[in-house]
Image 1 (tube, rainbow, N blue to C red):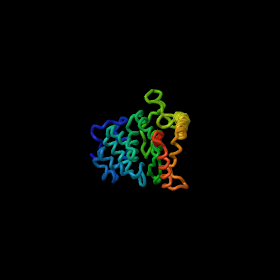
Image 2: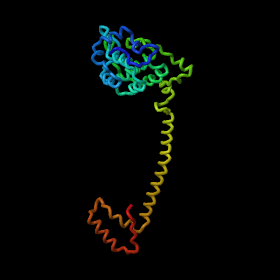
Image 3: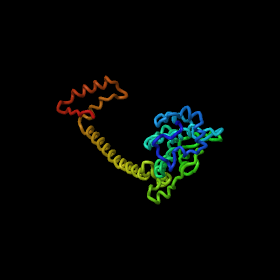
Image 4: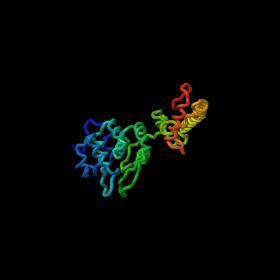
Length: 277
């Protein structure tokens, strides 16, 4: 009972979902210790914790021993979770091995149009992945792993189901043309859909506006300073009250005495003190 497919599961590509894994590898998974100890009675929710503990991906290694990644993949084929759950697995960007597991399952079970629509955006993910195979550990990347799933026939020692070519789907109007980031870069477009030319134009316009405003500001400042100077020079008291500021040679007491002596000689009618600016 532990190795049977869940009741009510739908046939994938006309057969039992577990049969997508070859018989030899499937039997080795059933006999492995990890399958017996950690994969028993797993659900779509509890499987997440096991996927977060993964340290590498791959098929078989050593003496034809299956990896934990392959065991969890077979468990997903056995319990057959809903599509919405697998899409949520795929959106978990911070957990790259959980995403890799979801990518592998989607490639094996989803329709061709859905495979292209869901996996092609991941070609922009350049994070590293550790892979284990018969030769040992190797280093790969998520975009390379996704590209291998879309173009190659065997990945992680599993023969993948046949995938309709994208060109055929485009000719049948089942899917839109692929958006190439390289073409956008050659045309000068950024990731948000706007071109670099528009950015440069907006910057040049803002600079020209600031240049147009700066002469007017300097003219207004010079006119205000000239008007202030004329007021000080034209008023009869402008030169007499210059003694308020400290002089370099005189002391503070001398300036106060001179100010008092001058203020006594000036009549109240001529006292027109401008407010400080």
